[in-house]
Image (cartoon, rainbow, N blue to C red; front, side, top):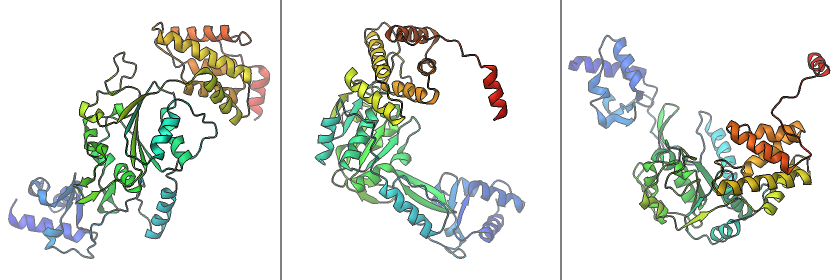
Length: 394
């Protein structure tokens, strides 16, 4: 592209500037096309010094260092997990104050402490930096336990759900476009460090090697943010608790197919690993009854039958005779289904339909033996003529 063509493109872009000097790749290409020029490779591919993000360019320096009504590229408010929106500054700040006040988890009146709860409370009460890895089968209350300890201690907590896509920008922070400006948005990890909060890394075994950006942080050391030049030191009380279905070694039986093998150096930075089991029958009955009381359907016999049924299934699972089990979370699903439909038979059947045909039928047959008062089958109830008539009148 000739020098005069380049000059014409820069002038055309400057005439369209909104006062920031920031343009996207698409805007640059469209502007070039509008004045009869071809693909401006010299700019979008050959000027790394003006590139501020993927597909985003700050052309202030190419406009002679000045832009009309130029505004500095400023850092976005560093507020935990807050989404910056285009609205008057006063409204943004008001909303962010609400977010800050809500970092302490709410107490769950149906929660029943068990397992590692008491020891976890001691660790978090000490304000000592002591990273903890909690593993256990799905639906046994790992994450809820951490949140309820924080609620009990009135400790701030930030929960981050980990996936294979989670990267350094998601955890530490990164640049983003807000109202035409390139701004830096701080991630949950640095926010937790500054506030002395508990960082909950949920389902950490779903992460990839991108989690290695947390190495120094897992040692309790200050973190140098290369994107802002800021050094962040952990405030007193900051701690990390990770939860997972595996111990970071993958899932040999394929039960947790999304679980990944985590780096040994990464796992070694957790001080202790806790193996969380399902609660005992007595504790689980308390949990089920509290869930029932919340929905005003307390039924002691039904609660006893449910926990007896789940206990037998789990013992069979641990012996290797079956490949599935009933979690505490699934018992809660059954309670909620019972609250909706008012029918024990339907509640159990709907909540075991997620399993394969043989497993589902085996679970249904077992419950029929545990609770002879409920006859379970797979047929749907016929809809009466009266119900059809009532539905038509409604």
